[in-house]
Length: 580
Image 1 (tube, one colour):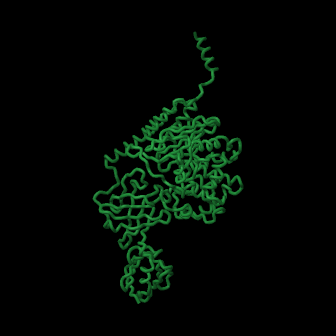
Image 2: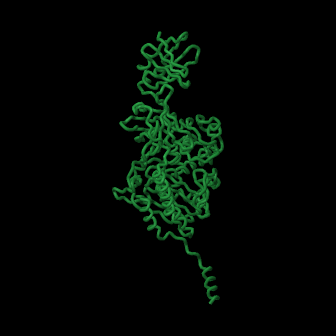
Image 3: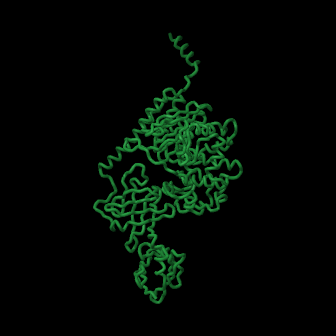
């Protein structure tokens, strides 16, 4: 009997292993879409150089009941970043760009906050998230600025870590990488990508703006989940930050791009990108801080436009993408020649990650991990912890306080040289705060701190602002903790437009006698008053409120114009000068 068992075991060992398959995938996808409340998704899977799945699921348009097809256009968000790196790599292979020469050799007007970083930053630094800058996303998100204007604001963005010391995800640096590519190629970034990548790879349906996508007969509408309901939301145009995430594509086109990455840079038998270049893009450049929470997933690093980790012990190269109403993922196991592209029309969804890992488990012949169960479990634990804190009233809020001024005195416009203008309007019981068209009702939290309520989809949700007074008791600035790794961003109060007009300023010019000295106020460029007192250098007067100006460059010094007097408010006292 034992001999028979040994014989059968031996024969079984000689039989070929069961071929990994995706049987039952459709049912799994349908179940997961319902679980994560995703309207539509498209999936492509490649294995050993062949496309073994290219299919749409669910709806691209819920109201019209239109299905997702393999040619339905979706925004791929930050999965665009690797395309921007390739756009630079093509220039490097042509000898037009060196990854490790300073950016200033190509862009003479390039400026960072730190002069030494300005001189040392390279194209490689731009695409590896090691600039020292935190995200600073509110500089560009929903902002009216052009790519050029955002680029020019780089010099006003403070770093939170030393240059090249820490990996910090940064969209504006990738925008700058695309801007660099356009200047070197002498073409708009969009046209350089179209000619250099889309056309050679046959990605004829892809585009670089959601405005263009909406002209297609087969495009997905954006959705997010609000109170457990799939809700349509507006498209978000991010053309200005385009190189960081504005590409739109379908799975047939994205499969071509995926195959090129898996085939050593070849497309249709021709070398599109050299193997050496591709290897460089897929190799670690910066360690991503933090250990993995799950045993199947290894620690992570960042290459050039790609995240690099391990999954089930195999090297995994991937990059996700999220922009309003869309979540995407391109992920592959290069040594196993397995890859997936997953596109969805759902905001910030976990579905792409769940589906990609399920596909990998199946094709590797491994029992699939219940990723949905794990993620839902993590969500529940976090929610329980938050509810417990609320129940026990664990909050830093100081009870019984009130604002230092009437609400109407907080109203006005506040400006930061990079973030732009933040507008505050007084309402009967709260303050309406608007920046780049994003608005929220901020209610009193304590003292001069106000807080926005939780609002899904609004970047201002649950954010706080704090107002600050000058020595004269006037509200002259506000600060907002927009970046957790930086001190709060300060917005200085700016005067109403009427206070910067010639008709308002000209009557204030003249000479004012202050003791033995004479203060001379002149009008410059029809919009600026300049003060000269004694032998001191000229000082610009910056309007704050009606007839009140701060003296630029002098903390605690301001002047106030009255009928025939100029009042000087200084830390050491208040002085009146008579008009000549």
